[in-house]
Image (cartoon, rainbow, N blue to C red):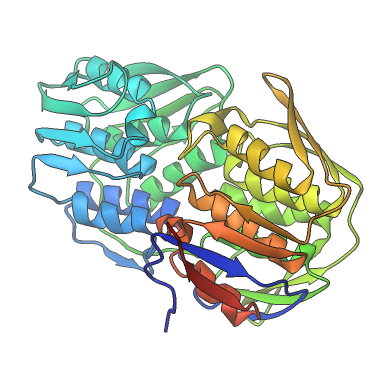
Length: 419
């Protein structure tokens, strides 16, 4: 039974543990797949059988809010939920006020709202132009069947429009302009749409979706590769590691399954064995070049591994990190500095990770209200004593992360914050 559920106003102390062994049996299902399935199921009439939905807070919010009759919809800090529900409530002609945390009000939504305006949805901003909160005032009928949208800001805008497109009387063609980021998430959306009976044709810069009613279907969500990536980090940094991950498939819809390829350079092998993915240590390279355009959520994990293992990193595709739960570039730079490493911005598209020349015996890391900061830095507990501030942030995507750490051998202690 999970030990650490409510950890607000606390610290997590991780005592250095170099040898890890066990199964992470609380690894969550994919919240990206779960959230898409919930939106499509709602558009299909809420009669599908959905299995193994994520217990992440983002998905629990989606389950609660997608069928809510309340006028004010508070998505808290869930960006995917904000974007998907804005499109869903718009096309189903529901008057809603969309709001969230103070950080959510700093995360842009103008590109999606502009596209919905073109389609015939009336939306007005209640505070700052281009940002939540905003009021959905109604859908007056489809006014366009082609929308041009930037592909280099957030794939969630594109996925939100894709999922509502079959419900439009004339269907929709999306023309993607510029560099397309996180393409695997767009492909994930297309695959789920097809599973529920919609047609979706993807060309180089176009997504073509005709009008077609979704059909109810049974669907089981696979485990979350983003969550699994932290266990690759534990294996990479531990002196000895034999870690088993459940319910993962190498032929995954998730772009973050790329972690398998990345970690071949960083010292971890992965292979399926009796239905489990087994992680074991191998030799690592001394430097790595990687473009995170299609898997930005892996960047923090990889940066910390490189910093701790003395691996120099040359990275591109980090642009979207600035508009996540926090400015992840700035947060990484601040926290990596505590272990003598740095993430240097060479220009707007290129970064260099300068690794540490020697780790301290102890460091305390801030999380910036960002679940991925907490989990990316926790694997340093294989090499040093670590404290993680505000550890409850993991509930956003991996509520039982700290309990899985205990399972593989860590003495993890909750400490009440003083003052």
